[in-house]
Image (cartoon, rainbow, N blue to C red; front, side):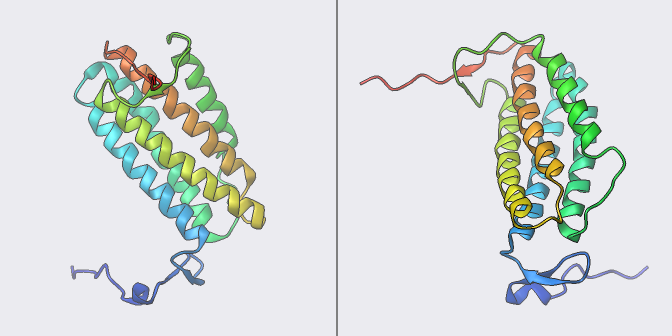
Length: 188
């Protein structure tokens, strides 16, 4: 079995190809968006690995693994310029994220202050993933506004996913029996 080269040198001039073969600039908003979704997927991978340090947190591993699969579907839709009719994604996925959030949030105390990332490594990773998710959502919304080749539901999925990651970050601190970190406004 011969080695397949990873590099093609076609990107050296700042261009890349979508799945369709169409050449676009590497700074194209679509490339930025699916790159951001890929970055989010990598951060979720880190989050999943961090959960292994505490067996009580492994309950979140399977939902995170499923989200990673769904993010690949989102990236595929962005990279093809084709509206994909993937069964159940993202409409049923949005409903499932809401249901999982409700189950986690039921155990959490109501928020009366802003929460900062920290208190537990997995909490911090969840917050990093949440912020990358928000950036991807903003980029996807620009694509949705510019053309019809990305369903608005994809942006809704990303919006709900960022909320889900926030609730997950709080759930981690609760289950790990750590303290949430709250913002303390500067006093002059």
